[in-house]
Image 1 (cartoon, rainbow, N blue to C red):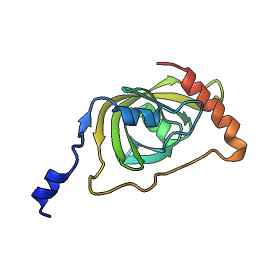
Image 2 (image 1 turned 180 degrees about the horizontal axis):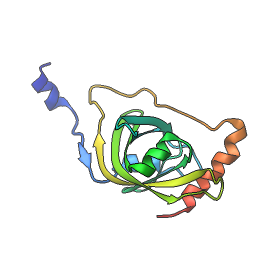
Image 3 (image 1 turned 135 degrees about the vertical axis):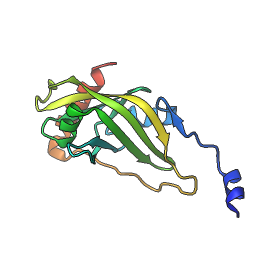
Image 4 (image 1 turned 90 degrees about the horizontal axis):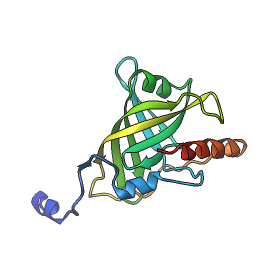
Length: 165
């Protein structure tokens, strides 16, 4: 198959959007304290280089608003306080690979559940479809809270979910 024939045979994929498409919104809109698909959160470090880290607490509050909780002592939190630019990546079977650019701001400097954590909102500016049409994703990154932290995680997710828009 030639490149031209291959391009004609590919399914129509969206390229960019100003808000989360329905499938992406639903994947990150977990409720009842469930762990969302792992989000790779990239911030700008003090030296200008990207720093990326996985998060399981990310929630889609609306198609234009994401929320997560972050430990005060984590580089990600420090970077978000200093420079709110952020990119978030999700890869999920069978065909979701997106990157979301946005701006972060602290909405709750100290969570009631744990004063060492803050709640951070991210205003979605651009969603980019990074899924290659030639592949299928067999599995994503799955995580769960360790046994002694299940109650902590459930309480933290409850506070995130109850904050509202």
